[in-house]
Image (cartoon, rainbow, N blue to C red; front, side, top):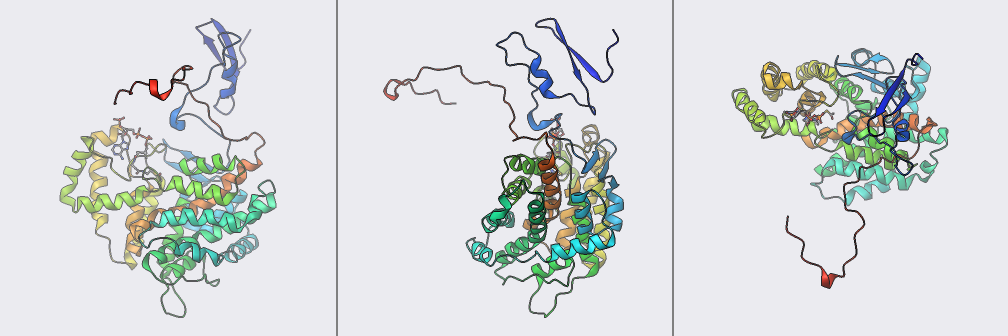
Amino acid sequence: MEKEKNTLTITDNRTNQSYTVPIDKGAIRAMDLRKIKTGPDDFGLMSYDPAFMNTASCQSSITYIDGDRGILRYRGYPIEVLAEHCTFLEVAYLLQFGNLPAEKELKTWVNEITHHTMLHEIIKDFMEGFRRVSHPMSMLVSGVAALSAIYPDAKNVLDPESRLHQIKRLIAKMPSISAMAYRHTLGFPYVYPDNDLSYTENFMNMLWKMVEPKYRAAPELARALDVLFILHADHEQNCGTNTMRCVGSAHTDPFLATAAAAAALAGPRHGGANEEVLKMLDEIGSKQNVPAYIKRIKEGHSKLMGFGHRIYKSYDPRARIIKWTAEQVFQVTKRNPRIDVALELERIALEDDYFVQHKLYPNVDFYSGIICQAMGFKPEMFTVLFAIPRTAGWLAHWDEMMRDPEQKIARPRQVWTGEPERRFVPITERAAPALV
Ligand code: ACO
């Protein structure tokens, strides 16, 4: 009999039995492997995939990436087109609702987000508890988690209307908490949101307003920040988004789940890399030192920060847009001299056998820190600048997961490598364990 197409036949050489499992959208279901057993007491076959190298944990229609061809699309729209024509809040709407808003919808959406930017005054007291030298990411993560205590209605995660309410609150309040954390490190008074301003202008106002009656951001810089926010708004099932889905799958409220996702983002292998890039460029110092630095990387002393990506193996399309945005920013600010070291690093690395063979290219973090520094941000703020827009993506994924009838609490399996059952030995009879 002809085998049905779109199936996979597996022969278990332990038993000589064959099994046929369906293939759907290029994937087999791991649960279909469970029926592959050596006998009735066998648990069944599992797939083993540390770091999810080849495991899809959900079906999603939000962000599409083709890593080999360097393609990134939100809801079908290429990132380059969105970065050129949209505002960040327009893109946040697209991620959330699946379509670009018409004029009226956008106006309502922007108005709603704008009217949720205020923070409860208690957050100020909370912020005061931090030492001035605290990292802004630590303050942001804690501040977002604290919002869970302020909005107990957010626990109502099964109600789509309540979910949307929390989504608006979170997108609106991320810049406010971030700016508060930043001002706390400087010892400056906190600035309240200004509803006349756009999302990014208002963020800049809360960061940098001093005694002037009205803060006015340079339009080029506000736009550059908006582009940066668009580029960072979502990126499929990355570590932070996977955390959001995983924590959210326990029906934890979205403030706590967002805090968890932001905590994942804080790591230097993830969103923390932009801060590391700046440290690296400072360490290199000047263009002449680049070849020696590359040699050290190839000898395995460290990784070239801002290079490499789990998914992109040809080029990170966001890096190209950021490189272009950097030039726009430098027309308003002073040119950041680190850009020359970065360009030289990129030039040499892209010609080098090691980087070519390992398919290592600049990622989004390679140039973003240089722009942000030129705009006046301290390196400790870089990951915060990533977390603000990524919140829109995290929440779109959270809502998608909550609507997906197939999703349950996320709970991976393990391959057991420990001892079988052991006999308990009283402490007086135990031999000292050998020192490792
Ligand atoms: N510099 C030098 N070598 C590298 C680099 C790098 N930046 N990245 C990967 N490699 C090498 C690895 O040493 C490994 O070499 P080997 O096969 O000879 O042992 C090979 O390339 C594969 O690397 P992995 O670490 O297995 O790739 P993985 O997909 O797990 O890691 C990651 C991707 C974490 C981004 C990695 O490239 C890295 O650490 N880059 C630097 C940090 C960074 O820029 N992170 C930001 C990523 S973008 C983002 O999260 C927003």
